[in-house]
Figure 1 (cartoon, helix red, strand yellow):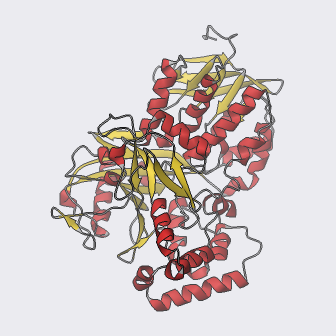
Figure 2 (cartoon, rainbow, N blue to C red):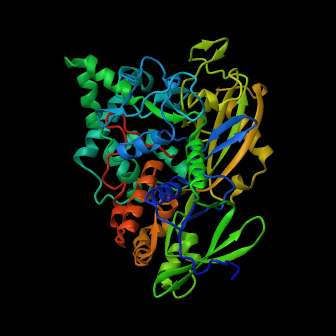
Length: 541
């Protein structure tokens, strides 16, 4: 054992993503000593990091900064306050404050706006626009029940969608076991087949019949066709039409760090290190020793040097994939726990960044001879292409792009680690991305001036296969009193970053109270109608 401080007990936090860094920050703020963070990557932020390629920044997966939690909003803005230079369109800070809305309620961003040009450590207020590319047309995402959508789809298909929805409401699928059941019960079979099935199966590489309905409950809760119809009706006939329209427009904005989501976590990491909390990068956890059903020691290995050491642990907070965590536990772990954990599956993805002189979409307005496409995301439901979604990073923040006359696009390809797509060389992936951008008529290959490939393993925990028996693993790990599971991979749950932060908050509260009850952690993101009530988002982020 090469660790000289073997008898120095500590809180070891595995992972420097949103969950791990939030836990470290909150423990440090409570003056808890002996906090240490270990991170296998060379960069903090996890899937919320920002990758810089030749001055052009990539947000892996896309991260809008909004939350129903006042605590999360305040936490973010304490680190990166709002700058008025980020305000877009007609939404302006009022009395040095900005306003957003969730669940039909106007929400104030309680932070003084900084003066124009106040520096780089700031949040921007950004437009939120996402659309679906389907049959050569761009539809609002999520679908809106309005005249524009009806004209694009056709009146007869809309009538059939409506009849299919009514049938689903009158004769729902019971029991609701699969994701297909979930979608049909909420949207009708025709709308499911047209707008949900192909894209969802592209994301997961599985039939919707093989995916648990729990994924829908996790990511699509709150969306209601009946509410959308009622909202559309109110907009047409209500005396409060103007007020409702203004409220809806407020929903279309979010906060965003000037240089992408990684800036938030780089800022937090810097503050932690300045306050004396060590963050060991490129350091992987490879072993756990149990003593009387408690984690007594944690083995870490430096990926660069190969050096390993054992550290005693009073408390362990883990965001590492549960499959890897269980595998690393030495000793008598129940056979069923090991078997189920080893069989847990994940979905991975590749982002190909392409820098263009301009885009060529003909239906958008032209600015200086170039197509001006305002979307953050475009979901691709065109046949014959592998790309599932693309981002236009300029529209997340203009500071994500090194030159204002360039368009920086990220194409997302969903795959499994080790499959043919994952193992393709970068040059082939770049050619594939350029070819498909031309095929869906968004850009010309000759206008591409730079490119990069980024692989993201274990991006999405799978709600299929061994997941059916996940509770067996969860109960065992929760029975270890000094082990706390938080975050997306740490809980094998499809959390957004604010949910991951809230799981960290609950874990810290339990630790500080001397409690071993983990239920509050698992209650995060269960019954919370997280997304906007009017325009609920079904996303794969």
